[in-house]
Amino acid sequence: MKLTRNSILADRDAYLAAGYALPSFHYDTILNNTVERPVWIHFGAGNIFRAFQANIVQNLLNTGHMDTGLIAVEGFDYEIIEKSFRPHDNLTILATLKTDNTVEKTVIGSIMESLVLDSASERDFTRLKDIFANPALQMASFTITEKGYAVTDTKGRTLPALQSDYEKGPDQPDSYLGKVMSLLYHRFSNGRCPIALVSMDNCSHNGDKLQSAILSFADAWCERGLADKAFQAYVRDRSKVSFPWTMIDKITPRPDAAVSAMLSQDGMENPDAIVTSKNTYIAPFVNAEECEYLIIEDAFPNGRPRLEQGGVIFTDRETVDKVEKMKVCTCLNPLHTTLAVYGCLLGYTRIYEEMRDPLLRRLVEIIGYQEGLPVVVNPGILDPEKFLDQVLKVRFPNPFIPDTPQRIATDTSQKLAVRFGETIKAYVKTPGLRVEDLRQIPLVLAGWLRYLMAVDDEGHAFTPSPDPLLDTVSAYVADYPLNDAPKDLNKLDKLLSNEEIFGVNLVKIGMAELIKNYFQELSSGKGAVRAALEKYVS
Image (cartoon, rainbow, N blue to C red):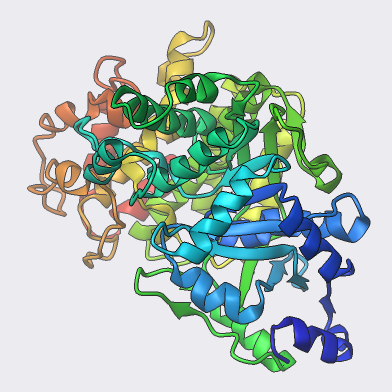
């Protein structure tokens, strides 16, 4: 079986016999509708988009709640389109890895077009301009990672690629954001039609991050006389251009070799993953967990698809904020970081394996239920305790999700302020709660210091995951040996007082001493990490 439209038609019985769910809508009708009146275009053609948004649209097409498909655009790694989308007629196999040890296989056919965001490609960029000029377009969504919205470096200087686009204007942009802005300016110049620009990236207040980047371009162009002055008012008018906040949650790891082998056994031709020149892992399939959440602020000036029929929850901005904080500050992300730090130290390579370790399981249970839930604001549309139950009892222990602590440990210095700092600050501010009652969160922060030594609990060196501050923060522990000799830990105070990293001055609030004591024990020799967990967790 080949993953192409012709093969699905010719080998339909073979697909069905092998247990694949196939699209049930009339493809040519949906394709024509999408070309003539595009409704939804998406930037960032990665795995979560193919596993989540594309599957939502497929279900809505199958049930008749939508009559136009998706347009996928990739602006970072063009090989995703050239080597994964187009050879398979934009089809994807979604392997949903369920906790009952079954795999649900679905051929996703909701993506009608795939384009590269390349201003040098006359064919693709002309088509993108046509799409953005079409009054029917209601939303452009994004999964380009939080870094994709950056306009300045860590020192506040405008990134060189963006500075160049600021000075050149909308005609021939080179940066990712510059090309998106060029398309938005084209829409403005062709009728000033409204549109929602919807970040679906997993970061706090994502709509604001996208809006800030858009406004920086509009101001730079208009102030230089490179764009109509009215463009500044257009992008600031919520009745014309909106930037809804969203919360997205679905674990979608890299394509797994076991899933590839399963598809090959079914008779699928060439299902193996490949690695692009930009180190992107792509395959004709995506593997993902069954659980998924997408909460969107209902702010769409040109209307929107009926995505609520596909499980999307629309609400107001305040509620999106509460849901996002519930997930990022308590019920999922801090627990992921905990398992990432200690998983690397204890030699684990899978999150689900860590959940079989009684000490690590107990550690995240205490952080979630005992230390985190007391300061969570219930968003109303999701129950925090039930969400946490699902994370710890269903999602993290799922052996079909090949997620790794090493992946989760990426950019940890950028995550601690939100994932733990917000809870610590809530304990400082909330009457009846005491910072001194937090015992396991400080153990995680001490574990991160121990992780920065880049030596595991057996005394073996390992390579820490990428982190923009890795060299800077690692320097604070570089001189500490892995032994039980007393250590002068006072130089850690400068790091522990860094509010940008931890979200709060840990020295000032009196938590630093506990963290340093934990670190002394964690770094006292081989086996000290597990010994400390046995002492403080069990």
